[in-house]
Length: 397
Image (cartoon, rainbow, N blue to C red):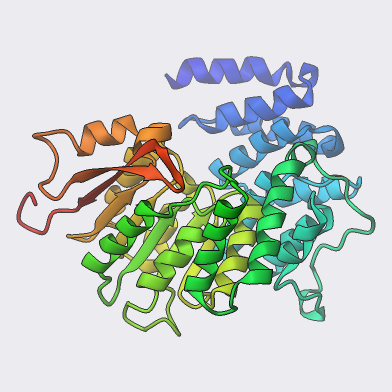
């Protein structure tokens, strides 16, 4: 298989100069996913992209971000960001999410502030600017921090998302105006009230009967001393607050010194909004939002917290990936015996492979159950939640 691939790479290397920048971005991402890579071709493609970074459209930017992460070429992400900034062009929120993931995972706080500063300067909705910029202190300590010399032009992708960000800005304003600071129940009630009073069904939250299931599941499966809770898919932080409130005070060190719940989200503006709401609920010591693409960020759980550390997992990101991400956690030995998995939206949009693999009689564990519920404030719209526990040592459960 490697020999034909190398022949294709040699042929492409001769034609790189004929590629437009969109083709270069797509090609480098396509070749980055192969186990056998031609570094010469990938380097030539990246060189061609960085010759004129201002001409790379946002779709090619996504491809380059994905390729750079896959090839462990994180520095290329920063070169692309700074190259576009020199021409007054910003990245979109998803690409900023990749940069936040790289900076946060590596513990490079200066670079994380670098990204948040750039994002705040070009966020599509003015009301979200303070939310994005929270915690960003312009300080001589970060003397290498990126500071644009002029305003950055927003990505067309973010311009198209203006209406969506405007609606999220209304949510942030409502929570700030009506909730009691430091009161998790108050923040949750205000989010639910925001959805109810304005009939804002675009804001999908796991409220009502789904919230009751989450509360019951966390009460029945508390965290032991070394364990954490994980949420995959954060959005505005509603369920992260609920999980942090229920699980965050548990664990070996207590809520004041050890995070109890980790939530992962890629879109950078959503990360900032969720962190803002968690801070407003007084749970920043109990729940934390990690920026990241879930399939790529899953190894960080094992790296940072060790084996058998995920006592509770809530999945609400992409139903077609539930079984894959659970398999990744299992392969990295993150799941301790008796750990609990709760999945939302397994009927709509749906998680058919997960249901087939983990809830099909007679192949499922005895603890596996699926609940038929309705969406929050939408009694006519049925959805399912599924729950299963890892078997205890010694057999099926």
